[in-house]
Length: 429
Image 1: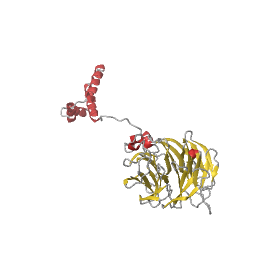
Image 2: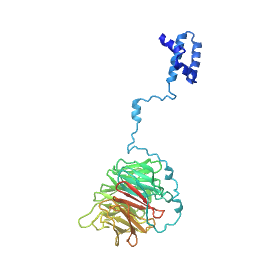
Image 3: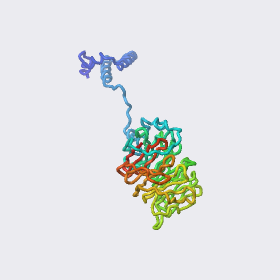
Image 4: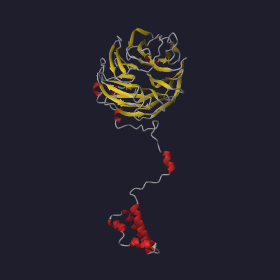
């Protein structure tokens, strides 16, 4: 120990020279404390003080500028979060302000009356949006937020895109552990309703990405739709003989509608929410009895199950925005037109055909003014039809794989969004 003290106290110590040349706040604090200690304790020897001082200088030299507190290993492991699809970060992205602000692309069209729909002519952008098939696309129902495009995919996520501003993803939602089979906006445009193969239906806040309510159905959910007169109430159907009506506020089942079927393909409200139509997989040998069933929402009574008499299932339904009518996509390769009033007769003089379905859940819908009907196709093309004459207006070669959904923008003329079975989304103008 003596030799070590002698070495550290020597004038030739290079470490001590560097310490004395540079400002050492740690040493100043120590020296001040050492003077106090030496004045109060006269029994300390000079050699031990020198040894303590030199040891302190070496500790000051090695001490980092900021010392992090020690965290036990068990605590570190318990607080670690693995970024899986179920726990990924859902914080808003850099363009999150677009979730609540008016897009400059939409602003010039606000307040204008809807003119006759125009058809797209060229591709604006193409995005590989999901890692699995995209099941549905829908523009926001609020005009000043209609730049927002919702997509739902088999990769367990829903996403909201800036659909008219370059196709940038604004938010990703992971409320489900299974494939998201259906999703839609609530009329307020601030919440999303989704149904999944994990057996749940979820209500999600658009801006925060937080799950507001989640309901366990007990079966794989393939379709969800909010009630027009009370958006907090919605219907869910799927791999079950039952369709359930839920109240998202209390997360309880209000009513159950049961039929002798194995699966519900789609549900659609009629007459402002007093009635609804369910599309099922029940096809008999001679007719499609129970393929479409009309229900009274309040009493759960069947109003009619003799609506569609052809031997094809109907994977999707859509209501006309102005007329008392609705359409049903059929696996016969055509779209059938029905009255929304009892007894829900099919219009046999109008049939929209030219596309193919071939087992895919191909969606169909209307333009904002109801003059144009649009449908995807299993061949990857998009077909536009005149609503009144049912003649084909245009066929767009959109995708190489099955195009399962195409939707016209509610405000900007000609803008159309399409998606396919590989997760690709395209915007057309």
